[in-house]
Every structure is written in structure tokens, then in C-alpha cells.
Length: 277
Image 1 (cartoon, helix red, strand yellow):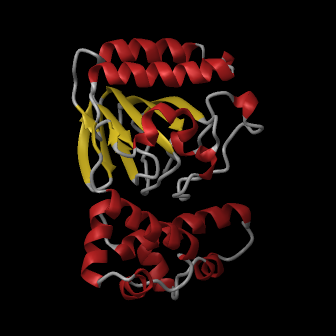
Image 2 (image 1 turned 60 degrees about the vertical axis):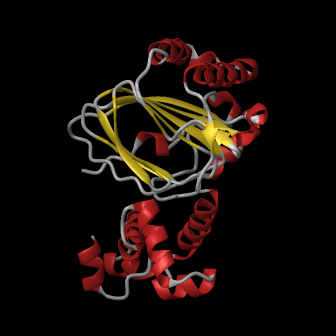
Image 3 (image 1 turned 90 degrees about the vertical axis):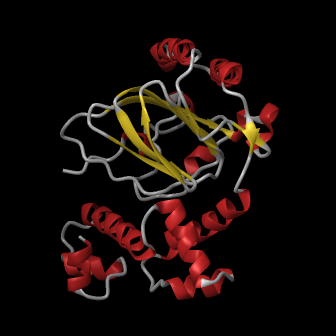
């Protein structure tokens, strides 16, 4: 059984301000539009059980994202770097920086997203930012105590508390985790443009050649760029997009034959579809 990764069905820090109890987002939407809101803060504690299998594809949003590992392990990729993150370690993804992660059973961690509307004092981390992967140090316990307290009162948060939470967390992080010059910004933007195009057109024929022609890259460069950011080949990625859309349509259209839906999402033959499935 595949259980949707909790934080991809993101709920805002304060539900009363969202107008909805759940964001219109799924595990197969790679650009999370809901995180563009100026007052958007997402704050969730995830506890992964033994019977959960998580499938997350690379995604990005107009918010910075922290993962604070409390227990267990989680495999996390940010841009082209992938590591196993353990208890006491922190990861950080900048705005529009592609990332994904897959936790092991038993993992417990906080996920915090802070929209760019709260980042004016940090210039959206464009020139300097926290490292993508931060090791254990003496500040982690203090930050965890702050997160534990904030999590206990999150349901009562108002606009002032949301801003205070963002300022306090970023301020505490600066005390123990110095900023570094941002690297690899050009390649990141190039990959984001490719990812956007695939997300909008995966039901159509897409090949490495057609993407290279569209974006003005060589096939070799595009292949290396894609593999570096996703850890998988282009065809596998597109098939995962199509399979995700297949399951979504099956839920919405239970009476439509599977072969018909498979054709709608871009599979040209039943054999191709069943191999991908």
C-alpha cells in the first residue's frame, strides 16, 4: 500500500486563514502553487510507521523548506546532492530549489515551510543561504525545544504569531548555522524550467531529443542535468508522472476502463503501461 507523503497534502500553519482544510496539492504536483501565498507557513510533525511506503518526486515552491530530523533516517536530495539524514541533522531547500525525500520506517521529523513573504531580511536567500545539509551541533536541542513549544500552540496561531514564529526560527538558525554563498543557481533554474514543462506536458510524447531542442541544450548536458537533480532517467520520471495521474483519474472516474485512462495519461500501448505500473 502506498500512503501519500503527509506533507505533500500541505495544510497551512493556520487553517482559519487558508479558506480550506487542505491544500489543492498531490504527490504528483511538482510546483506547489499553494506555497506562493505571502503568509504561508507549513509546520508539521511526521511519524513514519512500518506499514507506510512513500513515493515522492522532485518538487519545488516559493518557500524555503527545513527538515529537522528527530529520530530515525531519511534519504534527502536537494538540487544534485543526496544524503542520508539522521537524528539531530537539518536540511534546507531554498525557494524554487528542487528537492525530495523518502523517510525510513521509524523516522520522526518536523517539516517547516516559510514563504518568501517572510524572508525580506534575508533577500530570499539568493546570495547566501543555510547549507543544504547541516550536521548535529549544540544548537539543535534549543531549536527543537522551540519547535516543540510552537507545535503545541500552532492551532491558536494568528498573523502576529506566524510572523514571530518565522523570525524566531530563522534567528535561532543563524545563531548556530552560518550562511554560505549560494552555488549552482544557473543549473537549478535550468532544471526548474525543464521540470515545469514536463509537469504540464507528460501526457504528450516527450523525449530527451525533443527537450534538448526545446531548451537549447545538448542531449548529453540535459541527461546529466536531469540525472543529477532527480537521481533517475528521464523516461522513468515521465512514467512516474503518468502513473500518478492514472491513479488520480481512476479515483475521479471509477467507471472508465483502465486502458482508456492509461491512454489519456500518455501510454501508447498496454504493455508499456503495465511495465511502468
